[in-house]
Each structure stands twice: as C-alpha cells, then as structure tokens.
Image (tube, rainbow, N blue to C red; front, side, top):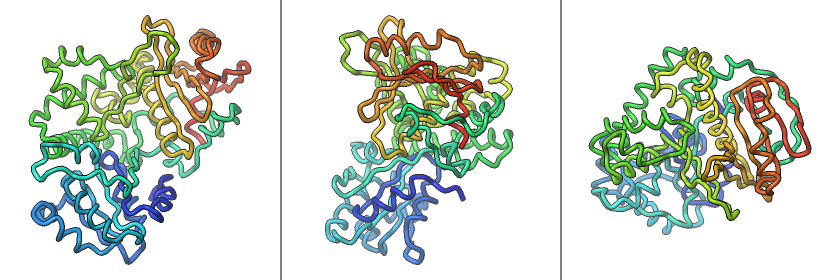
Length: 414
C-alpha cells in the first residue's frame, strides 16, 4: 500500500474538527486513505454507491445518519449531497466529541450542495464544522516512497544535485503512466485499457447522475478538444464554435468537469503592474495520463514529436508542482503569465511567503540562452524575485544570482 503524504495532516485535523471531507477524482485512493484514518475496531463505513444505502439516504437521511456509530466513514457523498444538512444537525448535537464523520466525494461537494436542481434539496456548507481537503493522484515522491524537498529548495534558492539523472524515455514513461494508483503496476497496454474505461465510466456516472448532464457524449467531445489544446489558454468561443454548442452549455460542461476533478485550469497572473495581461486560464488536466488517453498518445509518439512533447511535458511539470504545493505546509499559489501582446510569457508563476518565482518549462535537453529572456525581463521589472528553468537535460547550473537551470530529474528523483 502506498503511503499518502496527506495522511498525517488529516489525522491532525481529526483532533479538532467534527467532519473531515476528502474530495478528489475517482480512483485516487480516497476510500483507502479514509479507512486508515479511523481507529481499528471503530470503523463503520457506508457507501452511497450501494443502491440500498442510497435509497435510505434519500428516504430517511436523519435515520441513516443517526444509526451510524462514530467515527464513521461515508463514501461517495456526492450521490446524496443533501446528507450534509443532516450531518451538520447531528454534529451540532455532539460538539466536543472529536471527529464524527470522514466523508469522501469524487465531485466537489461544495458545488454539488449548492445546486438548485438536486431533487432531494440542497446540502449545507457545514461552515465551521468541516475541513475540506483535496486528494490528488500520486506525486512521484509518493510513488517512490520518498519525501520531496523540491519546494523547500525552490523557496531557499539553493538546489542540491539530483540523486539520479533520468533519460528522456524515463520521463516520458512517467508522463504517460501518470499518478493514478491503479496504473502504477500495469503494462502500457493495460494502462490504456484502464484509462479508457475510467473516462467512460466517470463521465457517465458523475456527469449524468450528479450534474444531470444529459448529453455526456458531447461533454466527452469537449474533453477531447481540451486535451488537444493542453497547456494553451482557454478560449471559450473557440470551444463553442468547434463543437457547435452555446455558451451556457459550454460553461456547464466546464464547471462540471472541473468539479469532477477531471480538468484543472492554471489561472492567469493578476497582480497589478499597470500592464495589460491575458486573463484567460491555461488548460490543464488533473493527470497527464488522461490527456494521453484522450489523444491516443503513447510513449513512442511523445519521443518522436518534440512539439507534442513540449505541450504535454509542460502540463506534467505544472501538475506535479501543484500536487507538491497542495501537500506543503506553506501557502503556495500558482499562475501563468502572458502579456496581452504575447511578448512576455512564463509557463508557471509561483507565489510563496514574500517571494514571486517564475518557472519556464522546456522539453529540450540542451540549454539555450533565449530560454531566459522572459525571466530576465520580469526580474528586471521587479515582477518576480527569481527564476528557474526546468528542462530534460542532465546539468544543474546556477546561471547567475537569480536564475537556476534545473533538470526535471530534480523534481522526479529522491
């Protein structure tokens, strides 16, 4: 069993919080992690994937919740978001008893609970009673059973040498395999089969049953369109035109796919610099394995097409960094930067403590001086304090006082 970095934080949260909610995509290990949080012998679990339990939740939510011995685990609560109102009521009757419920959901329960269309009514935000935590697919450190120091070194401005140098084939294998636990011990062929079934079942299950989306095939076409434009800025008008759907439908699909933890967007840098900046987010997915599956891409395709590799490599680095940031004790925000004329663009902007750091992501293995020009411009204009270039080569170089050249091996080996 793979140890999840988030486990210790959740155990701490359970000491002073009545409800701990673990949200995340299907098959990232939410249920397994949640079961580890509840003491042996005290574990009472119900899952709303079970039709009988779901019927009880709909017919008699108060009776169902009161019947549970606490601490209890409630799985897939997005199937019955109205249960949160009952959970809130029971929690308020039993304050001071530690964590009463650990709940999991493969859709953003906060979005589902506020939906006016759910036939059993709205849920409750449970404000002041719940700790909301997102569980992402595995980081490369978790897969290796190690701890990552990458963000600590990024903040300090000093990097130790990578423990191992990965060749490009190793990196590409990690991109295609992604971070879903179920994929880690499968052959490439079996990975592809699992991902195909995963996408179809997730879209059918959550989009149709949770968000009442009737045309899930159309939503899947939109998803494939986003995968083709991975690491590009989102232009909704192009999506609408390509798929012949209206703006309202586009917004519904996008919000639902985001809430289901399938797609993810990197927001645009919005600091006030007195300059016109692009405000559209960049397209990303919660895992690059999904992108490769949607596009029918394998390791050979990436190795033979450097343009294709560039876009997906950027998405992979951004996704891995944001997973690490989610697990870190520091508050870390991430963005992309592009001015309105497209003259200055930085792939990843990081704000942490009092620092702003720009990160350029390059699939090339040979250093080129023009990789630094946008970082230097933002440093000179005092938009960022430091810069880093992450690339697929082997050499780690402190280029000058404020810029490092870092091999991707530094982020992926321990």
